[in-house]
Length: 304
Image (cartoon, rainbow, N blue to C red):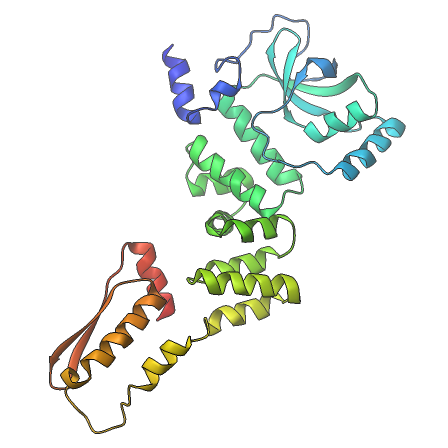
């Protein structure tokens, strides 16, 4: 009972419910040789509940099915044994689906015994390394490994053969609005475009750049340049900044306090923070910018 609770805690809530039992290390009660390749019935195989790929292209599946009809399944799938003549796919769901389309009833499989956490790690890591996942699917896979397998980013990098910076770049994609994530998933923009858009703090400007990148076919460099330029000033912001004539005869801040306050409000909107202008007497004063946390502070520094 303690082992079962420990496994469920390691996996995160809800995962073990996908399986009939979280305790899946089955004793070798059937005459199959574990850790070897055998031919098994497809009807005995269950889908992988940890599959990171969410879409299987129909055309690509039909092409693979046609190839299997001619050449058979060249590369065995990998399964884990979860009971007597019952298996669950670790990797090879696409090959299994194509084999069914090709009319096969059996498939060659490498049979393993694995617990739920090992299953999750093997399924995600093998797919990330070997399948043509889109960047969002990879990002979600990395997130699952971090959260559900309780890995740190350094450990995750070692598992998937990537450095920490690369892993972090993928994880940051999940901060983008849904529309941009869908665009990246549907190959309307590249990961280079998406990485540039992450740094845009204004949602309106971020979406405008995204739409232009899609409709005008902007290059990554063009998007990066738009991000650096920042959002165009609104008419109100231009009027406020134009009203501050610093080359005129110096006057105490108190004389221009209303104008300076408007200027502070403009800065606050750009930084998404509360900004206060504090007169100190004469021509002196302070600009106080509040930040909510370390990430917010870093965003303000970038804008500065």
